[in-house]
Image 1 (cartoon, helix red, strand yellow):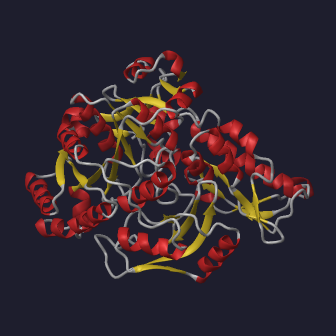
Image 2 (cartoon, one colour; image 1 turned 90 degrees about the horizontal axis):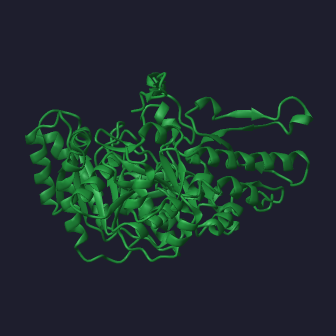
Image 3 (tube, rainbow, N blue to C red; image 1 turned 120 degrees about the vertical axis):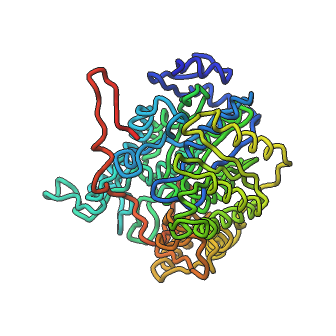
Length: 535
């Protein structure tokens, strides 16, 4: 690895522009404020994917390989990516820093603690919970219902439902409660969409923590929580500077889950990167129907950003899985319908994707050539990508295709719906245009939720679907490109700080569990302090 000061120099920054955290750095407040005042010089490339298998199809690896490929071609490029959550690191998915020769470094440190941002978000979230219960304990605010949950950056199914306040009046008011994982906390989504300290404070003040006896929302602003929460989040709001395997700069900042929240890195990191580099590669979680749609309809709508190119990651493994997971060409031809649906969804936003065909050692030439022919029939640029095995050299073909896409005239921003549409119109627009559904319906409970939120003046917010990442539908068993289905919204919640209404579908959980054999079993540290087993 290069010293982080040398990585900063590649961006025209000095040692005074960063705060060093060992081998990592944070952009300083003077630097962030200076960059925010500059018009963006760079163009943004969004990396998304087809509907993945449970293993993932390599968006982060592709993003890192792509930025290394661009750098090898003489482009002043950098990455703007999400921070990993400890839950997946110790659970089934593993780390979130890429793989092979397309990795963020230092990988183990970024995966485990990075610069402490997720811990700060956890503490700020839990401070608000403590202030809520303190106000309840002393009778300083009437509550009919407390809705704010505590959080922890760990997969722990046993905290989904808890009872607090036991042991007598001195310990508070007993009630049922529960925990979310930190990446699903509204504080995480709020920080990632905030554009500076004042915007963060305004968003934190809007956080709804409960309902009072007169059926009105109780907010963090009313509980005088904003100042202390902002103080805890002051450093966490600063983007982190890291590097790729080949020393290309990367800002790594924020990590909301895309199947629950909006799944993108922070607005502040993306904006800073666009002021520092000519091409910025960013990603959005899971497939385009989740992270990609939310990147455009939520993050870009709120920030004024818009990508100049979109990369859609596909693999032989995932295409075959969506075609029935059988040998032979027929399964690939059937499974490609899933890729085709995502291509159509991207084009619905006025963007034309580049298909990145991630190559694995078990893929055959015949399989890859068939997928290339199927892509050519859809009139999309396609490039094989072997960044995992070959780093930037293996991603140069993809980099070339992305450069060609960037030469096309940029279109105006086009969203799935207008902000003035009704909530039901917004739901149906995303369900039809992006998922390929017949539409969306609300259960009686969801209709009751929406009526209350509308009375509170929140009914006009954008929509954020909480949905399975394993299907275009809300049923994880429906693979490929299903048709003739309806998205059922069972609950509607307000993420008032983030600025959207959360439409919950299926059995989405805000606190995941560990698998039978957790990845935590493989982690260890040597006597020299070297951490091993982070995959």
